[in-house]
Length: 287
Image 1: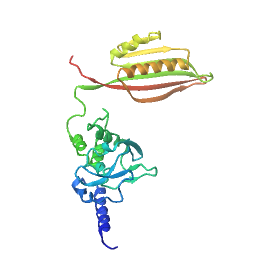
Image 2: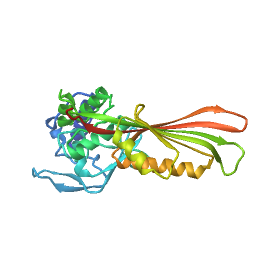
Image 3: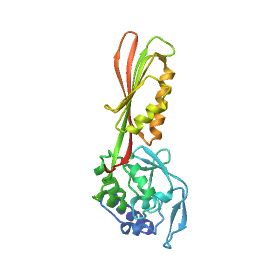
Image 4: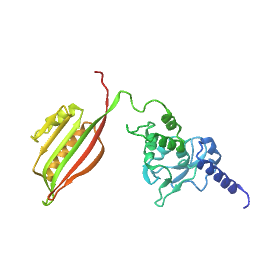
């Protein structure tokens, strides 16, 4: 192969790509050598425009869809290039090659679920994680791969991610139903709905608000309100359950998880238990 400007650009691109894939931490200075070469890796949606620093480069204006490890995310170019010294800033600033999946989305072979937190940090410059988040080591590796220095610093900061004066309040909603096998529509022979929580204001509100369900009992010792009723049709049971869920979520709780357990099965009926866990953050108060 004869030498020339194109060959030099190709060799430079190959060398720098290998450095990037090596996983070593790089800064914008490592890539500025290729900044002046608008090579064949420029995104198809890019337009050649003059940068703030006077250089010419490829700038995208359309919303960008990324396939990160099989998970699709759509965001703006401004978000992806918020930190120009990062890998994403280089990729979507037209200064580093990009790959596409068969559908034409930009492809990054990294942890798809964890990219949610990376992207939200790019949007807000704040790190917000669930209280039960445990994958800090994995998230640090993702932050290091994307070379987002503020995110790396945030993850290495020993300060707690949540204020020390906060804690999590939990509400458990369980529905135990005996369902007839032979009725159509399905008949609920008997149902018990139980709300369990230490948030007494919520228990009292439910007990006072759902007055038309006269078969309910409040047990403050067990921190429960229980509704037992039947026989009734399936829609009556669902109606009360939906209204209870709406009331709980309006108090600031969100569903954490759900589960279903088939407790027993007889000749003419099934017993099924559904459970929902709701959580919300609250601040500690001095006694």
